[in-house]
Length: 365
Image (cartoon, rainbow, N blue to C red; front, side):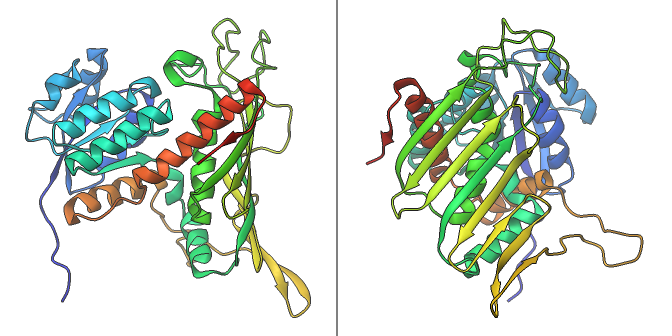
């Protein structure tokens, strides 16, 4: 039997109307004919009003208090796009109010908060997912299929890359440790780690060793993609590195930086080494191995085209993330990013910070 097309619209609300909401969530949701954006909330109510005005539909709710917004029983789904510090309690309140929740990455500032989110999702029976959109890139999707088919064999060594040379975000609360819980490790390192764990399909951690540095953040008038940062406000690390050992003996090296004297710049990429072949995202997607006694490197063609002078119009990672998230609501299926997986990412990040403070390895039970 063919699948019956679901024509109803899911009523979605946004909490936090800053850069990530306006740059990613709202545009992606507006592309879906299965979605109706019905409410916006921000502690700066003018930002919520601006988001509503940009859409132009009458009757959109505008709030400064998210708890008031959650009283609207017609809202089915909430996207949490606030700073890391508030991810947990806003998500839990939304779940308790009967809403499905897509929370921006990372899952939470701490693993304890992330566990409470997971418990709330299980208790309420609502769906919870985390915004790890890099899983939805064409190279990520293709490599995941290759890994799941077993082409790489046993993946026993990997690198999770999140390296910027000079790209420190100077707006919002990115440099505020209290609000964010950290710097590049929790901001972009989280993407690279999630991508790598997902590709490996390995979430059982044995131990973590980490180092965290604040070496360049104190520089004044520094070169930076978004202009010089204020050293007085730079309260988080500028780079962090982790060595992760999994229970099956596999090793993952996680590298993250906003500012590092390095010409090797990679963000949200993975390198995988298996018993049968390897893969990396350094120069597009590359698969390497040995065949008939000869080494080979192949680069899959991931474009959507095939016609001269036209490369196609591929779906963006953010658009695919939104579409599949709403599909899982309509069809009552599991989301692509399960909260249990995102919890492990948060636990590892927290362990790297803890290891850096104590100078000791952190062991998982």
